[in-house]
Length: 631
Image (cartoon, rainbow, N blue to C red; front, side, top):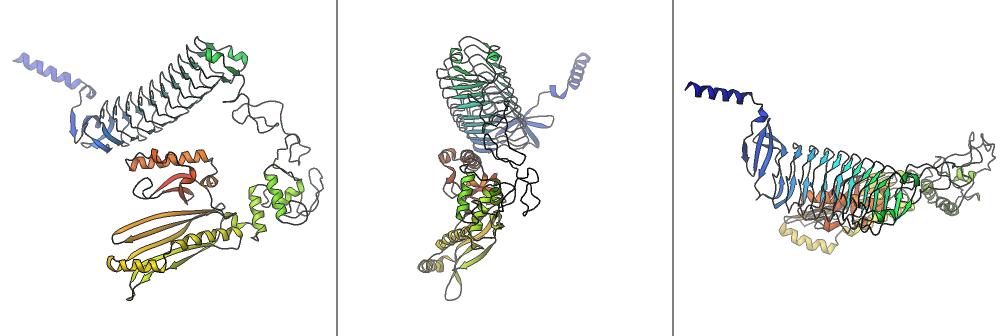
């Protein structure tokens, strides 16, 4: 008996001496979730595979904060369509969402630092992924076989893209690789047969074997200046590849790295012909070595590109050529003698009445502000001369440049052109209407009352009208008036609706208006309409944005100064992200063919807001803040 007791005591002492981490955590269950607790933190280990639809993972289970999604926790939850991961989670385990074949969207919070191996493998319905900048590593096969994944953003925090991370993502057309990635592992983008171009940042040191194997519509590749090695079969069977940019940092190219690249004809090499001799190029790379090599080339070009004959810095890279520069006659000469490029300088005078330059003693003739043609009067001829000058077609002397500098900032640009237009239109020559405009707001009420004086139909609109008699202001006012007048119902329609309102109750059809932006030469009027009758209601917005200088409607591209393509893609991405979270419909197929001018918008607090009318994508009208500011 004593011997047994001593054994029990000894075992108890051993267990007591073990660290807490050595004691296996017991599993608990809450609803669809099975979890374990360690050090006061919960990890989801298993989920009922019958779980379906949109799911928001709880941030706490059993009172414990959920910090981990364990290995294969959601594996084969085939009816799961959307997942929002709470910001308490720091890790997504191996195979965590593997074979969730209906999963279309996933929200990964900034708290997550690692995405495990095969975490989203075979999530065939997943269309886009935004990886937060807290993630430092993407595991092996993490998104492999996600057939409908079209775009991926890999943030600067990620240092490595694991083996087969995006292999067989056959719909992937674009990938943005962050500037902290140092290695692209083996087969990372293997068989991504919709990928058309790839830019590998300067941070990457090595490209693994089979990394872009059989990406058969890939046409161009730009490899950053940090890459030293390209692995075996890295671009094997990329048979649409026509050009590649290789930096002079590359010292080794593996076996068959460019085998069966039958269309490869151009290699833009950033080094010299002698630098190429330092590259160890293994066998099976005949398509690469037989292509035309351009030495000391630019990124994606045979030669460096410059603005003009005197420009020293290449437009597309940091290369600087020697022995060039602008040449001027004197310190006050503003046009280069060789390329005619204009620089911001001019003769220096004591005042407007002084005609002898203090620097070079040039004597200027008298001038009149706005008389850019030099004929002694300010008229439409001056407008035509200024347009030609700004288009680079005509030239003007220094005196006339002073006359054409309507704003007094030392140069002639489109702002001076706008000022001259206003001057010719009879607007104050200071051009105050170029930046902002004064306006009035008047309510036009056509509400309908019955014989008892009761309002049966509330019907009115607000009309905003710009002050001033300029042509631009009149254009804007006429446009707004025409739109608001079309909103009013006729007397016959009012009487018809009034009959219904007697039985159903008061009817409302109103249009309120406000100026939401009035700066930088643009004005935006937002109108909001309300409609209801007999328990049925509706509302919405219209935006009217005008250029104060011309009176014409302003486009999104004009307001932001961005290119149409980049702005169109940016807005599409915002709309897709918004609806992917709110609705189950696959919004990408509904907007992928839209163009920039197809989007309705208004400006609020200097930000572009997109308006999606009801039933356009969803049953309700939505407004989407884009985060894009007007210039």
